[in-house]
Amino acid sequence: MIGISIIVPVYNVENYLADCLDSLLKQTYKNIEIIVINDGSPDRSQKIIDQYAKKDSRIVPLIKENGGLSDTRNFGIKHARGKYIGFIDGDDYVEPDMCEKMYKKAIKENSDIVECNLFHNYPDKFDVEIGKKIYDPHEMIRMGRSVAWNKLYKREWLKSCDVWFTVGILNEDVEFYIKLVPFIHKISYVKEAGVHYVFRRESLMNNSTSKVLDIFKVFENIEDYYREKNIYQKYQADIEYLAIRIILCNTMIRLSKIKDKKERKWAFRENWRKLNEMFPDWKKNLYLKMGKTKKEYYMKIMNPIFYWISANIFTILFWIQCKKNQINYNTIRNMRKKNVN
Image (tube, rainbow, N blue to C red):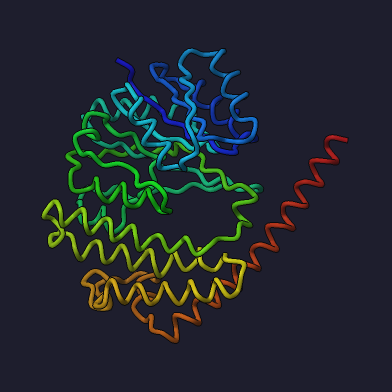
């Protein structure tokens, strides 16, 4: 049996794809299949995929009509044959021993999920994100890392959960992870950072859109799912806390990146309105009231006036950072030109 199926969605990543595939082919653990899925990409990605497929039979090249990241991951799951499944985006790459360390841990502990730490790669620097080892499902909902690409999932267990990525929305990782949490029998952690999450220059300076508000659809889907499984009451406070944390922190930051002032103002207004509509008693949340971190104090004192002050501060800080990123990018580009000459 194949040990690990790595699913690699590909769309407009021709400048990064070779690094991604090289890192997977150089794994010290060899019993893997690399399912590379061209999601209707209009660039040269397919030529790169074909070249690598000729070099190594572990590359499984697939092509589909464009359907987005979630649709591509679901497509890959259906084609996977490995004991475990992992996801790596086509513009990221991994450490040579990532699969070996995670697979050994998975087999040793008969894990449903194995999680590793990760690198953040910026154009001019990188840092390491070390996560907390969390085993309690309540805490996993509130504070767990929901990203899909730093984990291995036992394929048979994942099939039994019948949880898929919702197509057509942002924050699909959050929904996928939170739906799985109540059914995890064993989660394991590898202390080393194994994945390099690459921040492209265009993503650092990217202008967001009001589609960020898909997060409310995500929480609607989660609530519906938990009610269907008759477990919503058990985890209601945890889900509410997670929603508060994402909506008042992550979503606020992403809304600040909307370039159009009118759209940005409307999106901020909708964000506040929907938070209070969906979670009218969020100020009374048990975990928020007990919280003692700076972020939790920030959320506790939130009111309509402070909300708009925060929205303006986030927006100003983002555009200041954009200018710094542009300066750093130009400096690095000029240095590279000098070195080439």
